[in-house]
Length: 361
Image (cartoon, rainbow, N blue to C red; front, side):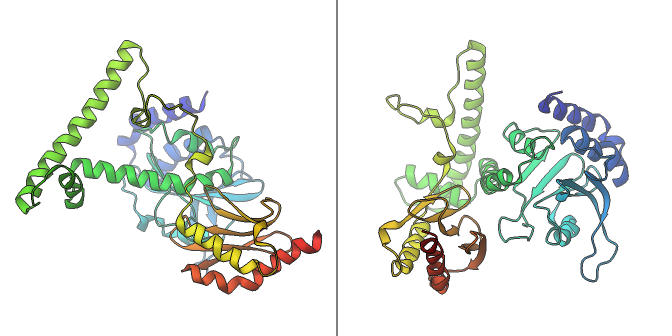
């Protein structure tokens, strides 16, 4: 069966049996184990791949168990904690995942009730599980945009680096979508004021805000209905329907495929950090040799624009910022920083990295 077919079959099973499940153990047997086995492709009967009731003592906590640990290449890659189907999932239910995450090799943890799945990693701080999931998935409301990311967790396609690199974007896109849904149904004052200030020429009094709150909610509803109706008309006529991005692109522009490079956004803060590093190392090498390359997961600073000569990496696309420093073997160590000025504290390390490459030349 194709991956999407396996998901749909699992969805049908949850829809059919969820109302009959009364316990957490029944949820594991009926839904979670089949999901691990059938959808993700791991052998739940092979302890070298899936370990149920995984024990990992943490500090004074002895004998506590995590529901499932999934291994790949002999190392734990995914931790799963299960609750009874129908039970709401919140961060309070993930206490064991938090404890186990930083003492194992796992980079992915999952909190689930058999229907809803929440995926976590360590975007905010290394080896510390984030409080907010980077991906949420509902088997009874399958989001087609989530399917390619979920497929990366399967045994045959497991790629932890690709998952982590995409996690930041997934996390914020998901949060933006939920915020948009909230604003479309119950717009707050800031959202109402945004539109009112661009449309209404008079003074925006409380009466005007109240009026525009109703109008904004009505306009949002009509806009979504119009989009749905246009897509239905397009489907019935057989004509392709343009995406929202295509709707705002001038007809005279040439469309190009969306590539990872197109999604990279270089910030002023990253450029300022680059110039600080450049100012530091110019005392030991020609500043013209210092280059930068931005990626989705970090901002790289290189010698001679050569990926084999990394000087530093700026990890600024997260709540806690880090600077990555390289040793003579090109191993990166990430150090937390709270301001750009703290980069100067690593001046000696940055100069030493340059000297490694000059000695090899």
